[in-house]
Length: 412
Image (cartoon, rainbow, N blue to C red; front, side):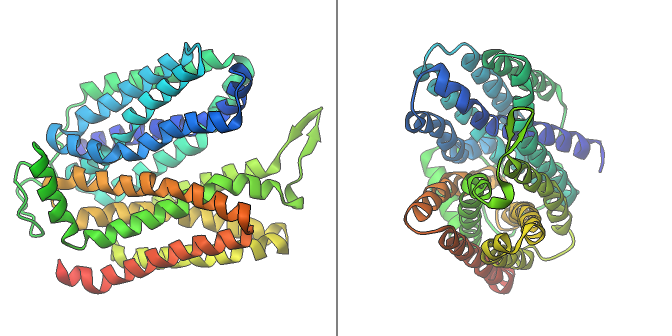
C-alpha cells in the first residue's frame, strides 16, 4: 500500500472499531439502567431498540450524504456525533433522555458504513487487503466493547464509564479532521462501464436519488441486495439469542467462584466473536484472489450446513460444539468482505455511497427483523426450528451468489 492507502485504511479501521465498540457496550449497561431508572425490560428494550433501528435506517441517507459531501467529512461527523451522544448519556437524568442519547448515537453511527466502505472502495488500490484489515478492526470493537465496559464498571459508576468512553471518539474525530487523503485515488481516470451515472457523483435532488436508485436496481445489484438482506437476517437471528441458548445447555451451567456466579457460555460467545477477526481477514484477502460471487455461494452454503449441524453438535458434547461454534464465528464474518467487494463490482463509483447505504439498510435495517423472527420461533417452536430458519436464509443467499456467478459477470 502507498501512503494514501495506509492513511485511508487506518482512518477507516479506527472509526469502524469505535462504531462497534459503542454498539456492543449498550447491552452491558442494561442491567444497570434497570435499577437506576426503576424500569422494566420491555420498556428498556424499546429504548435501546430506538438507537439500533436508526443505526440501520440511517445508512441510506448516510450513503447519499457521502456521495454528495465526501466520506472523510461524514466519518468526522460520525465520530463527533457518537462522542457527543455519550456525553449526553453520561448526564441523562431520566429514561427519556437516555432514549434521546441513543437516538443521537444511532443517527451518528449510521453514516459510517456507507461512507467508510465507499472511501475504501474508491480510494484504496489494494482493496482486498483494505477490506480485510477494516473487517478485523470492526470485530475487535465487537469483542472489545463489552469487555472494556465490563472492566471499567468494576472501578467506576456507569455515568463515569460512559463519559470515559466518549473521549476516544472525540480524539479520533480531531485526527480524522486533520488527515490529508485522496478519496478517489483508485478510480480516478477509470470509466465505469456499468452505468452512465454522473461523473461527479452525489445526489443533489430527489429526482437524482430516484434515478440513481433505478440505475442500481435495474442491474445485478438487486441480487447483491438480496444477499446482504439474508446475511443481516442470519447475523441478527443467530447472535441475538445465542448467549441464552448456550447458557441453557448443561455443558455451560453457571459456576460459583469466590461467591461470584461465572457463566461459561458468555466466554464461548466472546470467543466466537473473536474468531470472526480471522474470518474478516481471510474474507478480505479472498476478494483479490477468487471470484467473489462464487465465494459467497460457498460461504453461505457452509453457513447453512453449520445451522443444521449446531443443535446435533450441542447434543454430542463439548468438543463438537466448540468446533461448530468457531466455524460459525469464522464463516459468519468471512462473508462480510466478500459482499462488500461485490457491491463495488456491481455499482458505479459515482453512486458508491448510495449503494453502500442500501447495503447497510439491508444488513442492519432489514436484518434487524432477524432478532424478532428468532424470538418468535423460539417462543412458539424450538431451537432446532430456529436453526432451520437460519439455514433457509443462508440457502437463499448461497443461491443468489451462484446466480451472480453464472449470470452477473456475463451481464457486467
